[in-house]
Image (cartoon, rainbow, N blue to C red):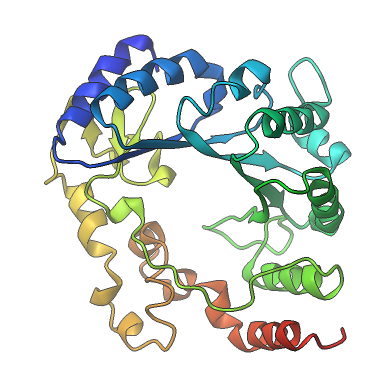
Length: 312
């Protein structure tokens, strides 16, 4: 986006004069490539909505000292940083255009960030597929020891293909995820959540005041739709709440319209699953259900062992 888009976004926000707070997630591509834009737009948004907070999803490479020193003033309280494995694996998958070692640069940037902004929350997403899952525990131990004492949450981000199943694929299927989770805890003693956790709180796709703004000012309801023209619900200068796709997201993904959900023993813990999946894979009801539901007995037994400190 360009600086010329800033007044348009500000006008778009002003269309909601009754909002009491505004939450922004800076997302890309890589948002730190446009850091001056983020500074300028943040200044404008804070002026019209005093209760303002932001987060960012970044690869962490450009998170240098200058950027780190400004995050707090920009109300950025949380970052998600993506790692693809230990140094060799990460660098093979995410080589810098000039310098090969992007892993060391990201780790160094995080060290510096915590030194200047120790209270920031970092969510480290480790992309996991069948080819790198066996090194997750080593990376986990490295990160935990490296950043001990700070607000750091490490979690696997499963690489999946939601629209096809191929037995030769490196993508993680549901059974692969179960095997991975159990192994991480049973063999490496990495804490994993094996007890059902309430997912209450509506997805932004089903919230009338939540939008994703694309690079040309186009509006979407779901992050999965970015860049797909026919899935835009308008743009920041011209949109309608009665747009057919907008209504589809707000109404058709309601789990209370599904008899299967209403009769399910696990509902409403799951809150009905992903609205995007409910809409676009309506014939495949199992794809909406959480991993926990399908493997509840195994997971509860693991939780029981944890609580009673059974020997492995």
